Length: 146
Image (tube, rainbow, N blue to C red):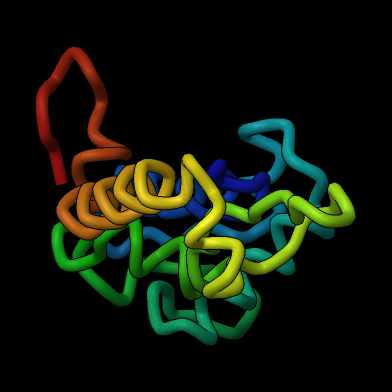
């Protein structure tokens, strides 16, 4: 499993907003310019973050976005699921056609890596449920700032 650009850009935006002075807002355009992200893509990400309840949109001439939730309350698993959908289990190769396929009960019995791959997947999901956005966006040198 890998995080997509959408999740990466979402994390970038959340980190940017988290490090703004109290009461300051940022626009999608400002965030995009600051990190070299296409503006249209950042606007789309910000809309998704607002719809998911992670940021609040303030309208008007001096509008922009601000955090709606504290980063320590949001896990990476929750965040990526809201932006990308559920973490997918590993796809299997069909022993009959060689194509990627969902694991059927018959394939599970024949597949020598089914259990180990799914154990790794479960551990990864457990890990993602424990990591908060505060841990991810905290500057490395300064420790866990929120």
